[in-house]
Structure formats: structure tokens, C-alpha cells
Image (tube, rainbow, N blue to C red; front, top):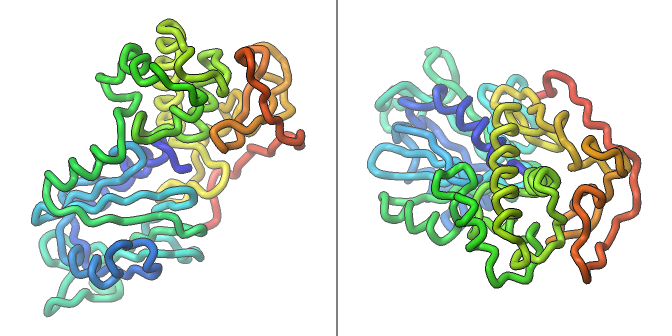
Length: 317
């Protein structure tokens, strides 16, 4: 978390706010964020550049900057991006002042701190667990090489067909849940959307990937596309730290069929949703809709009280 729908929600909200503006002043408050570069090295490479576009690759936000420079930002588990928060929240790891086009936010080569001219806006990257990163990439070739080494196709890509998914599963004895979480094979899907898609497709998370038939791969591909598109329409899911850029919560958690619904009835058949361990992650499923494959012994977690998924319309900054 955040997964593809949450990152896409941030991108759609943030792009019109930053495109055409200048990274007038950058403060990297946590040196982990800029590794392997130091905060000063990354700041020097980015500060003063104009934002030409904001795109997404899998779970990455990709900042396209003047001078053929890119910043690949990953929010990891608890990262979020807030625009003009008031008051500023805790756990701020990066602070960016956005100036006007060109060098409107600069004076004598240095950024102007403050809003007295009405031209600056502040963007903060908040990350309680400090896993988020920002990586500098110089040129298109470096950008493509970076993602080629890290990401497979995402389910929303037209090239991600049922036959492509079937080819990914061949010869693999690992659970299908593990394959869905492997970003090198399939980009953008995390724990939430894997659980929801597997339930919709009627496939047990511990089923060895290589056992899936073409028909099952067709159902799973359709379920993945549905889950991701539904998540985008709901502007993401907020179960821990995810926020929109204005601090508002996502709402896809209100539509979960199984994720975080341990002990509650399955909306399809009424059986009790259970929680097991799959691919090292807490995994939710209905064992009636998703019968376990032969030879598997699911490791169940101790039953917990049903989670409270209700959320206020707006989070505290």
C-alpha cells in the first residue's frame, strides 16, 4: 500500500497542480529517501527544473523534468503526497516549494522561502515508516532500463492478455498469490487487489501458479482488471495511511469482498471469510468460493474481530 489505484489517484490529482511549475526549493529531510545519492546531490540535480509531466509506471510516480531528467518516486508502504497541507502533518520526509514556470520561484539562484508573492505552493511527502524513495534518472534510456529491470506488464496494459498471464504461470510451483505480488512479473498489484481479484476469480491464493488452466487465467485477468479499475473509480482504498493530495480518504475499502473482512460473511455465498498466510502476507479469502488445492495446508491466523472499515469523509492533516 499504496498500490496502482492509489498511485494513479495521486497522479491524476497532482498532475494539474504541478505541471508547468518549477521545483523552486527542495528539502530532503530523510537521507534514506534519496539513496544512493545524498540529499544535497539529489537536490542539486532537481532544484530549479520545470515539471513537464507526471506519469505512472506500476506503483511509481514518474516526474518528467526539464533537461531530460526524471525522478522515479515510490511511496512504498506508508507514503503519501499532500498539497498545501495546513497545518503540516508529522513524518514529513521531503518538502518541495513549487514556483511558477521557468525560474519564477528562484531569486539569484536561490529559492525564495515563503508565500509573500503568492507564487509558491508547498508539496510534502509524508512517510511514517520511511520506506519511500526518490531515484534520479538521466535520459530516456536510463528511465527505460530502470523499469525494464524492475517491472513487468501491468494488468491495465492492452498487452496483458489472458495468454500472457498463462505464460507467466507456466512451470511455476510458487503460489499464485506470490506471482501476483512479484512486480518483476506483474506490475502494480499488491496485497489488497490480489485478494480481491483472486476471490472474484474463484482461485485459492495458495494454488500453485503452474496448475492454473487457461480458463482460470482468463477469469483472473478479468478480475485483476476489474479490481484495479474499481479501485481507481473509488479513488483508492484507505485502510492505514493513504490519503488524496488534499488529505481526503479513499473509499474502495467500503467495497472489499474479502480483504480485511476476517470473520465476516462472504458477500457471494455467506461463508465466513478467513485469514491465512500466503506469500508471507496476511491473506483473506472465502474457502467455499475459493476451494483450497489438493496437498495444501493453509496456515490460518488467529481469528480477529471484524475490522472497522468506516472512515470519516476527511482525514486530519
